[in-house]
Image 1 (cartoon, rainbow, N blue to C red):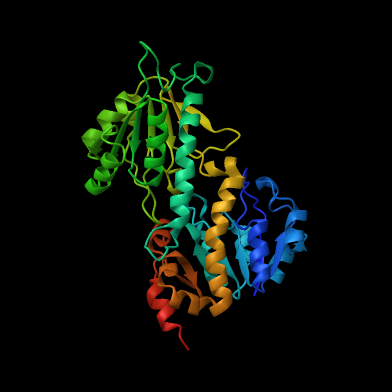
Image 2: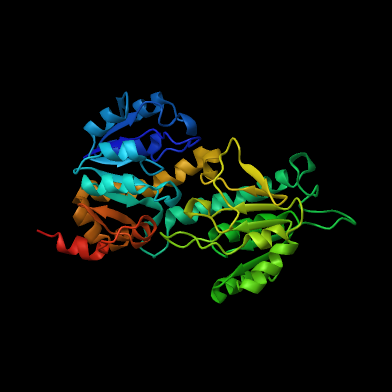
Length: 377
């Protein structure tokens, strides 16, 4: 089994899907690895460290494709990349809906590429290992981002997050009680912020209440409560994720207009379309813009700024499933590990993910479970 590690071409994407340690483990297991030149540089991994671990060298994308059975990358392929993939390829990447186009998916379907969305892959305990781990890291980054853009220098409210004697602390409102929200709440509480968290799932709110001993104010995510808390927030975080689907926009432009001048919005759902009506994707080099006097931070690949840590997380999950495919073959690996099937996006010319189909207007969808079971010879 031959595996290619692809260099990311998207703007400011520094992560890599497999680390040199991962290459070493795969080579010891008898697999052949090729890495496109410079693929690990953004994460601090030189080509030399990959070669010492046992990887071969590919000068460009095409050379890597010609070598490989399995293609691993971080972001989904663009239209030019997708057009070059072949029917014998298995592709692993994020299913980042904000970067998907109908043309790129049509190429995968036409060329009968088997593709997987790595953040959608389930573990045996029915959790999402990549999504949870990445979300925990992202949540820890939010206080430093929010604190920076609250500064007067950036046009913020000119307040410090944690307050001080006679100085009130910042009001932080988090929409979503998932891994991002919980990780962020822990960090914001640690520096003395007042934290409100909203979610539609009452069990999730109970978990938050127990976890933080009632120090986080929990509210149901009703339209009234969402609008009310947004208006008094100094920092408003959208941490809503609908697995494999576009995020609903739950904060209207009218509400954003009524927020405190200089408040900060951080839309962590932007890679799935964003949950604020005023959200639009930004980049790490130009991460913010002002609309209605509110600072918006909407970077889809926020974890690219901590690329080395994020790459280690990616590596753990990718290694597990790649090893399974190398041992049993693609179809048998998915049959024996039913939890992997949730990550299947395209198979043998058929779309298997309803959320992807809904977003791009693909009318023919067959669930992965039906396809894999019927493909047995």
